[in-house]
Every structure is written in structure tokens, then in C-alpha cells.
Length: 299
Image (tube, rainbow, N blue to C red; front, side):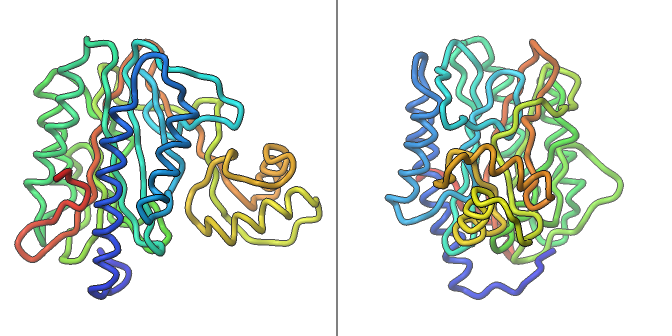
């Protein structure tokens, strides 16, 4: 349920964020091709968001094959796309009011069914949304479609509410039927994001970590860490950011020190079993009296 009563101007900022995001998502997806640079795509998309009047709500996620979430290029990343399954996940902030979207690009030409499973599950989920619906019912719609394709939903990832400068808030939107859930209310702003996989349906944390967020603001002695913290609190607030976004000296070392003092926390890359594939599709919606409004739909 909503934590705050949003006024018309704030809803318009959610809508503006969604409009920008839909355009950048589609343009970025067109740039996903064999041989293209991960880092150049991420930097292009994030700058494109700024050109259109928004700010990135989090670093562009570029997840490959078994990766499901939290993968973003390092400052010196030289990775390029191969014949792979690619998930891109993007967010936009307008004065802290957010939109979140994702799409899968299949560069293998072999995973049409898996890609369709998450996309159709998202549409089925959106059709269930109206005031009074339990989030478990939304999850049941997702699960039914994905299992109908012969795949598994990723059950330990879920959709989520979007708050003011808060990327993940209540209500939680499961990717399967659950007995205990929350009731959607008029005004809720939520991201629904089905993940489909030919794996077990449970992701685990990898060793890579390039995305962080502020946890506790406190005094730090190290100069580089203090410089990084000043930028984090001023520019990103509580939203996730990437190592490559930091301007100060030795950003990786600064983040290690901030993390060791529990000033920031990291988001490890989440993965299915090696050799398995994950597809993803995501839209942001506003619950309305007669259903919902999708803010990230393309024209």
C-alpha cells in the first residue's frame, strides 16, 4: 500500500519518468548487437536519460545468459556482446519519483519461447491489476503463463513498489502464487517484473559487485571515502549507484572502506545455474480506480 498520499504533480513526475524510460529502453535495445560494448551502451543510455530531462534511478543493468540482476559494467569494463541472451534493466528519476522497466534481447535466435514467457506473463499480470486485488493473485498469473511455456518463474526475485527516492518498497509483487500477500490500492506505484528460466527458478549471489547504495550516513576518516560519501549523499541519496559514477580518487578502494564501515551496501550479481538462461520483462504501473495505468509502455 502507498506510504504517502501523492498529489497530481507527483503522479505526473512518475508518468514523465515512464515516458522517458520507455523511449530510452527501446533505443537501448536497438543498440544491443554482437560486438557492441557493454560499457558504452550503459553510458550512452544513462546519458540519454539525462538528455531527455531525467536522471538514472539506478545503473543500467546488463545481465547475460544465467545472470538475472545487478550486473553493470565496471569503470574499465571491456566486455562486448556475443551471441547471448541479454536482459537490460533501466530506471528513471524525476525529482525522486521513479519508473523502472526491463526487456530481453535474444542475440542467439534460440530463445523465442523463453523471451515470450516473461513478456506474456507481464501482460497477464497487468490484466489482473485493480484496487482490492491481492498481490498473490498477480503472482499466480505470472506463474501460470511461465509454467505454461514449460519454464520456471524465478521465485526469489519479485516486483516491488516505488517510493520517493526508494527503488524497492512495499508492496512486494511475487512471481508465483503465494498464500500471504498484500492488497493493491488506488495510487500504488509498482514495478511488475516476471523472470522466466529453464533453470531451477532460484538465483544465488555471484562474486561480482558493481552496484551500491547508501545504508548509514556517518563520519569517515579516509579522505577518498569521505569524498565518495559526499557525492553519494548529494547526488544519489538512497538510490543505487555504480562504482563508475564516482568522481573522486580511487573509487573502488573508497567503496570498500565505506562498505567495511556499513556506510554502503552492495548488490551482488544474481545468477541462475551456469548454462541456464533467464529472460525478464518489466513495466511500471499506477493502480487506478478502474484498473491500472502503465507508465513505461511504448507509444
